[in-house]
Every structure is written in structure tokens, then in C-alpha cells.
Length: 81
Image 1 (cartoon, helix red, strand yellow):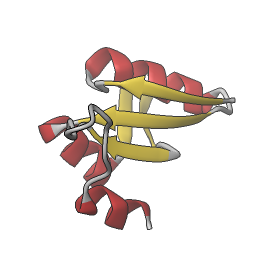
Image 2 (tube, rainbow, N blue to C red):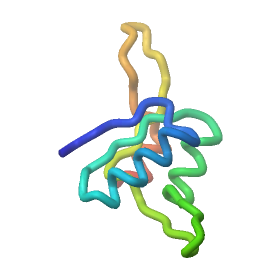
Image 3 (cartoon, rainbow, N blue to C red):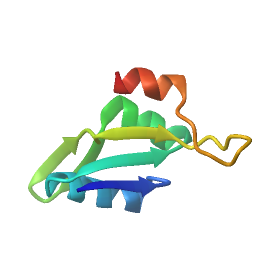
């Protein structure tokens, strides 16, 4: 299943991580430092058994456009290939 998490921060990042580990394709939609960190490092979860990290299926930057649509920034497009 393809799922998107909006404003992916602490809670959205945790949910995205668990969904990816469960076999789903997850797109993370974020802005600012959260998006920069996800692009650079993926999503990481630290727990009693250690640390794991994953790369979301898709990344989107939240940039309101004149029409109210969300657009992809060039840095995110480059990171996604």
C-alpha cells in the first residue's frame, strides 16, 4: 500500500518508519530541518535493541503554491533521482 505522512516530524516519522518496516511504500511530506534531515539521513529509530534507519519511498517539500497545491523543490527532486 502507498501511504503519505504529512508534516513528517517526530510522530509522523515514527509512523512512517513502522509502515516502511511493515512493507508499505511511504512518502514523507515535510519542510525545513525535518525534510533536510530525512533527505540527508533517512529516518532512524533508536530502541532497546539498537538503532535502525530506512529511506522513505518518496520525499516531498511542503511549499504552498499559488494554486494551493504542494510542489516538489529541486533539492528534493535531486535526492529522489
